[in-house]
View 1 (cartoon, helix red, strand yellow):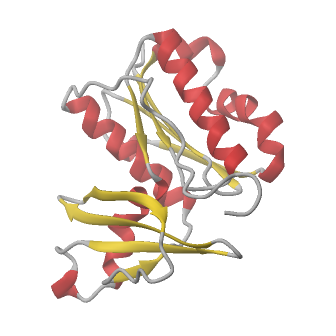
View 2 (view 1 turned 120 degrees about the horizontal axis):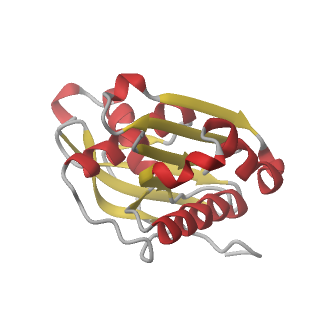
View 3 (view 1 turned 90 degrees about the vertical axis):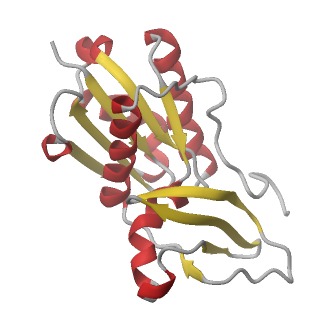
Amino acid sequence: MSEWLLALHSSTETLGMALVDARLSIDHAQVQCRSLGRALTNELVCSVQDLLPTHQWSQITRLAVATGPGGFTGTRLTVVLARTLAQQLNVPLHGISSFALMAPRLCRVLPESERSSPFSIIQTLPRRGQVAGRYRIVDGMADELEVPRLLGPDEQPSPAVSMTVDVPADVLQLLRCCRFFHDAQRAGPWDPVLPIYPTSPVGTV
């Protein structure tokens, strides 16, 4: 019987899913990405079922989910699904920000002398300002020094890189984190895992 590690990422218009048997290397991971946009509301569960049929959900041994920042509805839906599965199956769940997932690949655009030092990832939101998180890369994984938040008008973190989307790479990184936590037997309570909303999902900030 398999022991599945499942990662879900929907902080963009694309749903990313990654799956691997905990007894196998990450090289055996299955990755699926679907550009769903608003259809995510109706297609999320079906998409997960296509990757891992419902009768195998009881074999899920650990989950990880991207917590944003991202679209309000998309991020919320996968977090709710992951929390529900973790609670009902009594398995660990880990929430990781979408910025932390992209940090290991984005640090490579920095000068080599700066890659071991803290840096910020910045996203510009039309009419809402800039959101930034701060990171340090340790052994290929991001240490999140500051959770993504809305910057003040005079804040200019440095060094900094711009957020770029690569869902296949980032959901695979999410699965790597899940695998790392599994191998370390790290606890993963589901209840603290919540979406990150640096700006209000309704109205003007």
